[in-house]
Amino acid sequence: MSPLARTVFECRRSVTSYRELPLPWVLPCYSPRVPTATEVRSTTHVRHSLLVRVTHWLTFLAFIALLVTGVEILISHPRFYWGEVGNVNTQPLFTFHIPSSRDTVPTGYGYVLPDQNGWSRYLHFEAAWILVLTGLVYLAYLIFTGHLRRNLIPTREQRSFRAYTGRASDYLRRARSGVELHTYNVLQRSTYLVVIFILFPLIIWTGLAMSPAVTSAFPATSSLLGGRQSARTIHLFVTILLVLFLIVHIVMVAISGFRVRMRAMITGKATLSTEFTSKELR
Ligand code: HEM
Image 1: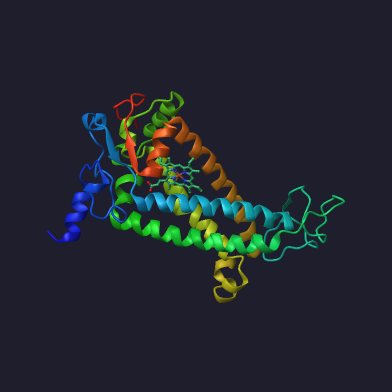
Image 2: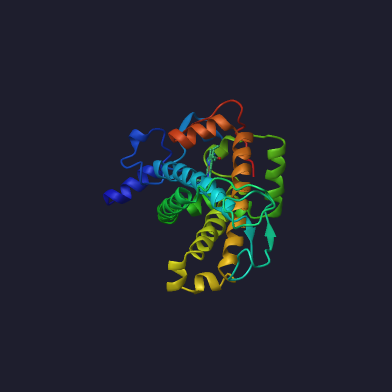
């Protein structure tokens, strides 16, 4: 067996310590299958590899920077349009009834907010590139280590309407499964897939479709969406969906065991405590 193949094999064993792993920061450290109830009862195990943890928290930081600066950019023109052209002389699709940081925008308010557009736009673009690069590294990890197939695509048993409603009712009953400290349930898997493969690509595409440099080289980036203003409006709606995801994500982590899950996402290790059942939920 080649050293790399042996490393992957080692990593995929049910490991309990990073010291057992030759290259923990690049290789998958998840169990290759859903563990049995007896295995679940057994103590501490490696839950998230370093690469997943670093890309997860980098994405979160970049997302918060994008959100804060995005709001600042929105304030400079809180009117949204459809099509290619939109300005104070065209009819908006909808308007946020808030004061603006530009005195040219009619808002109905008798004052103008301080203009923070300079640093906001720079930071927005820098954070966007951090998000794109981090996302590409995470995507490569998902595909090449099998993490996508093993932990994110719903298993055959989970692909049913009953699995979704069953796990949702388990959440409502606040049932906590130790098995889920090894892998994700069907609701988590489906939500993560939507965020990774639909919402993030859409937010990046609509962002690029607003860039004159990109659209002059690749006009289809904006024309396929109906124009630059349409791209801006879709960008806003996708942002709202991502914020909703973030709120639900945090609530779900809280319901299913905040301390143990956060510790695992920070240190990599999860320890089973008595509040978890060894039963497999959906
Ligand atoms: C925009 C921000 C965020 C995004 C896009 C995001 C996305 C994700 C994704 C895709 C996973 C699965 C990772 C994998 O195994 O490959 C995950 C897991 C996780 N996230 Fe987030 N996350 C965000 C913010 C947060 C925040 C703010 C918290 C903490 C309050 C958090 C806590 C966790 C935890 C604890 C897990 C592991 C869940 C479990 O073990 O059941 N995330 N997140």
